Image (cartoon, rainbow, N blue to C red; front, side, top):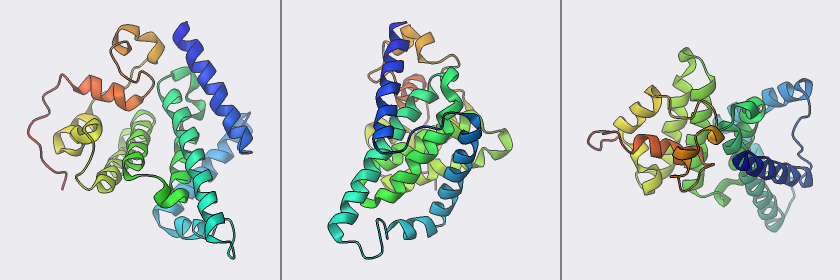
Length: 223
């Protein structure tokens, strides 16, 4: 119960942050589904670089360098808020209604922030979104999971932190794609396991914990 209370409190705080930025979560399915489609469209356009080119013009074509830097800092803040919400929703099945929406928006605002988001954080966002896709997509669309793992690999350029390093090998990637590595009942239903985690509400911490007892074989690049 205490764990769920903490999740609820954190969720409310993060939702308040979104409202302060005039980005409240959709309140019904009739507003959520169009919002997900729009976020998905933005992500596709960003992957084609068209969206990121347009984002460079924000907040306006004649804006100053300082105003653009301020806009990108705001995009970074929004990226982090959506990312934290996405982490919470990924680990609680009763809250997955907004999971994909938050994951897409975290990536979209990350793209709009450009260099204000570090490569390490960008890679973390890609891997977390890969977890989202692995959990929600049918088998014939799982190639998209591999695509975002590859983006994470390209961001770190072989310089990933120890927290992400195991995923940068072909064995780590294979394990990620072939195993159920998120709790089926949410973090609150696995208290003994999550008590051993440094960050109990970070999905990647759980993934690393599950994989820590598995022999992933020798290091080798994906490429």
